Length: 337
Ligand code: FES
Ligand code: CO
Image 1: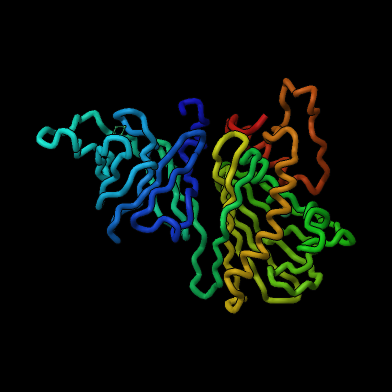
Image 2 (image 1 turned 30 degrees about the horizontal axis):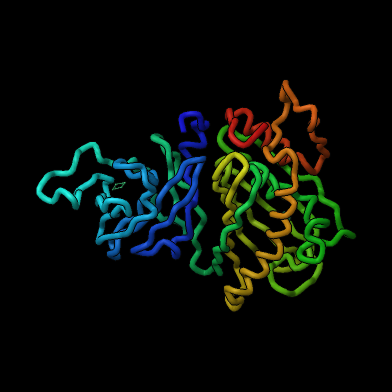
């Protein structure tokens, strides 16, 4: 754990959709190479909690246990832990106080924007937020598990020349591959990209397959693995706000979480949105898992792996180039090469 880059350690990551972690839920998750148990006691007021998934008695994962009221009970000997992580009951010794050092390592955890977020660091940064406009049609997609570096996954969302080819027929048309020049600026704490114009079919995530010019009027990366974007469809008033967060499971394993807020489409069924999102993003997952090396190559590496010479960039890749340079300046070493 200590070898994880501090900036990554102190960021927040999604560990589940809020609706999936109801009172009485125990969910094992992996985050930055650590096993975590996310759970909520059985009452409606029970807070959502994230702990190291490890019982201090004999090292059994607490996620194998069960919830007893507002406590988590270990499967092996039934020791019970209260919401602070302290053992408050050793059933085999009912008349004695439990050992004070029987305390589970706890992490920060909270609910926001339809998700449960966990933070393993001691100096947490601000939580990424998605503007919540009640007039918008909100959609929180099911997660995508991807065997690739979280930074490869993130970079794919800045890559504007792939939809025409990889997403041919879903949102792309290879006869319209042009990506016009756009603005990209690395600021101290974020990258701001503006006015990426290209062509898409079915750009509004409905089954109407018209070819339209789209403008990603803003795409902002505030955290290494979190971004918000606004996609506007020319000759319509339709706007789609996109919130994408990548959870780093391991250096070469990730989960991608996508939310949309649209100023139209209140009538589109949840299942239809999910089917459409799956069609598009499974194409991304397929290609992401094929990339070599699986870790994102940063720029100007002294010791380039002779098996994988430096990748070649062209003008429309400048968002990726700026992202890689920014990661390097932040001192990221996890999931990159
Ligand atoms: Fe958890 Fe013994 S290992 S109670
Ligand atoms: Co794609």
